[in-house]
Image (cartoon, rainbow over all chains, first blue to last red; front, side):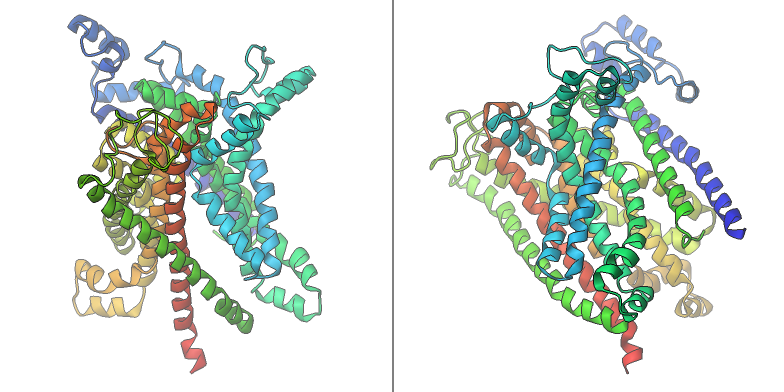
Length: 339
Length: 295
């Protein structure tokens, strides 16, 4: 009963914090973009444009307004899902995001699946013989996957499997010249829904290298945290009690220690999403995967500030949302969490 | 239970120390490269990292160019060695900034409490939630290119980590008797923070420092790879890798392989050191905790 109330209060404060964080992030991005050196009008028109053209451009972008009015327009737009238009081609930023986000999510979800499977497997292997060869390898695996620069790993994988062996395509998301299936924007899902097996094959072949590279790089976080949690759990009193009752070490680990060590891994999975996005940014650029991160890089190179601003705000919102969901999930699942 | 803990610890310490020793050795190699390469370029023993007009372009590794040349005929080995100094410089600056901002902010927030504390915590938590690379990409995009600019873009990312650790530790130590004793003989907040709190709350900083330095090498490389960070005239591993990306499909591997390997090695070294420090600090804490029981 009291736990129920406490859980409810915790969830409520956590949920109320989320909009506050979002507001802080978007205001910060807005302010940073405005105070930064470099005139966005110069970026579009070049420095040799006539003063009249520059003024017209300023008025159209709302840059002639006082900062406070610009800010209210920006916040008002956010509430209506309006993130402004791209400087380069006038396309609404919300449209750009809606078009590119599914590709990134497809890559991210596949990578997260691969990472958790691979990472939990590796982390579990080292536990039976602490300080043994497998434990050492597990530790080196954890540091190694973290220390690999994502783009470098991606380039080596590309070189080996696409250039030298020629098994898989170098980059992109779909075989060039073929028409990708329509629908949700998730190509795997769409091809399955249409029953278009050749499209599924093409999409899978393109997804395989980027997703497994990203998954491999992130798997170290999972293996390391499972290892740490397991070794901590194995020192606790209830495990000692199970051992002293004469249970076999294997049963102690699998039935008693493992379930309790898996829960913190869920928290890790939530935190990983943030590094997943950082990694995905670089992986997308390396494999020219047409997701939100590739578009962000393009916008950076064009100094297209509404697109940069919009993508950052949306990605930040996603991260905040996921971290809240994970926190609530852990609080609901783990009776030991107190607030 | 106590026995299990202890035996685990005794066996685990040497492994972590060995790992830390390897890390320190590799780091010394990078420091040597950082100091000696510019000197050797200056006296003409090594070619200038930005000079390549007389060389063949995209020459594979050979006796005259051990790691080959890039698309402008520049020597990949020399550029990779030069990159070590640049990376170490930016990373050192970035984490130093972060410590100098994060530690005092954390102490003030933790010691004073109240509205300032709550405000700072919300701001820092918000920054902490953001993906590291995304945040520094935005900052580097806005600050422009340059060694100081890149360091500033990186430092903002790490400030919240020091803030969190120091703030929580301060809030804990604040309740100890010796702080109350100091206060009762009339010590002001500044004096207490400097004389009594500081040494007690900085124990976990070295670990964080080396791990953040490792992370910063990766983020700096990521910025360079995305076309941000340092000026184009500075040889930097990330931007060299970006240049290598276009040549990769034709099978030119050397322009990509060597800068990436150098980056990988430096991150490994710093992470190893962090790992060792962590084991050492936790073993010190552990032995302090059990001393009264043993005597």
